[in-house]
Length: 389
Image (cartoon, rainbow, N blue to C red):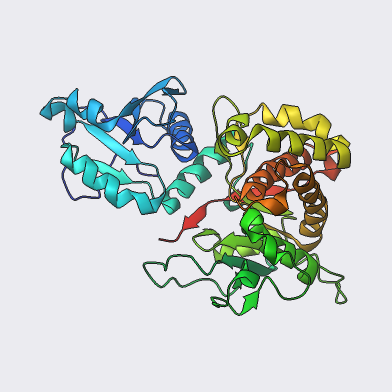
């Protein structure tokens, strides 16, 4: 991962201090940016990271990992023209925000910047986590001989904005329209309102109505006995797991059970995530539902909440039987949360169940990554997510 090149995305030559690497600033102050900081601090410990940058303070923290979070205008105003030429800025935000950020940087005279695209971010995470060994990259495994049979469904909604380009998607990705029962417009051949479904709950469940459809209509009994080679999964319209053909050959022969996107770090711990997106009444409903239905997991819940890594997006690829077991665990809890919520799930439409499921996914797979004895653990590997703009 190149973080100290002499030429920026904008084509301007960066002025380097003789014999000394340029200082860095990371544009962004959420999980993506914090992950970048951790990786660079680990891989390039001699690089000085001056600060995190944001357009406006808003609800952002004042510090991340002890590094200040500064508003761009105040930061640029504190620098001389020479100093502006000696700092490199890594833009670590969703890619659809990057053009506006670049324009803002130019306006403030900061011309040495690099887009940390989703592919570059994944490359950085591959290197970082391969060394840390806690969230191992799929790419660290040897390439096998047996190709997995992949079935990944891409959730599409009738209100999605069109992509800016035509992407050549892998043949194993199949679009599925979510919330299809609520619209006559069709954006995919497969609909989440066909067969056994919860399509009408899409306003709360979001992409999870597709996962429910997969569970109920594709993960039944396997008359051909090929479940060991079959992997099913869910991606988003704009986010897909980055898997090469070699990665597909790594799954079966290495006994991979699950592939998840690299988790995002949150400070001081992942309880910050649910505080940001969930009302306290909803959070109490989650805790009660897990305690009632899965008391064994409830015992592990507090410890997992007090660590900092969180699986975002509800994106997953798993062996057929593993995904079936996970869905059988997840959806009864979510249904109970709906009953306990104030107001109840049927009386609202604010995607809160989708956010809750991210927390439950983190609980489930971190629980099974550490399960004892070791032979009962799930073999969980990780990959980056490609962001489609």
